[in-house]
Amino acid sequence: MLLEVLGSVFNIQITLFIILGVFTGICIGALPGLTATMGVALVLPLTFGMDAIPGILLLIGVYVGAIYGGSISAILLRTPGTPAAAATVLDGYEFSKRGESGRALGISTVSSFIGGVVSVIALWLISPQLAKLALRFSAPEFFLLAVFGLSIIASISGNSLAKGVLCGALGISLSFIGIDSITGYPRFVFNNVNLLSGMSFIPVMIGLFAMSQAFTTIETIFTPDQVTQKITKVWPTR
Image 1: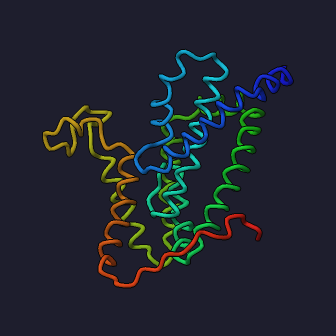
Image 2: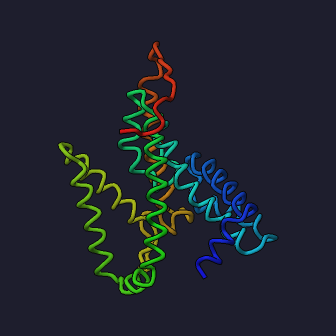
């Protein structure tokens, strides 16, 4: 069965659909605000007239390409194109400030390829166990997961613990907006029906990253000397 599936995948026509999907996904992911899920939703109507295997692989290519494409704007603009590229901002943009954007993009490309291959193999082998584990998740597990997230904030704050606590408090405060899941009472909606469903995670995260970079750009907008560097050392040799 595996050989039959591999024979279907490595067909010239299907391979072209995969390449087209990945290229489209990279273009979508590189634009801040257009997430991988949104890219799949945009391409989905194009697959209605296609066979099952080419259509599914096209959508998978769009999703995978968008996840990688988010690192391009994260490295070059300090604004993640997708939520998955948020961590890339921390180190990738530092490379860009040193004129090593090419090296950062190369590392991101190789890392995305290795991570994608390993993830597919892991999902293929342990997906039944993961499904059973997901069904066991309840309120205590979600609470511990939230505590773990707050501890991660404290660990990466370094010497700026106050800033980390402030950011964590800001995130918790934003989560209060919307209808209370227990009492059904609206909280901090200010008579705005658009806030009844709460603050969506993806726009808030991308917007906060973009705002910080916008403020930094405003501070340096009157700098007279601008040095343009060529992108070199794309392949990470060491």
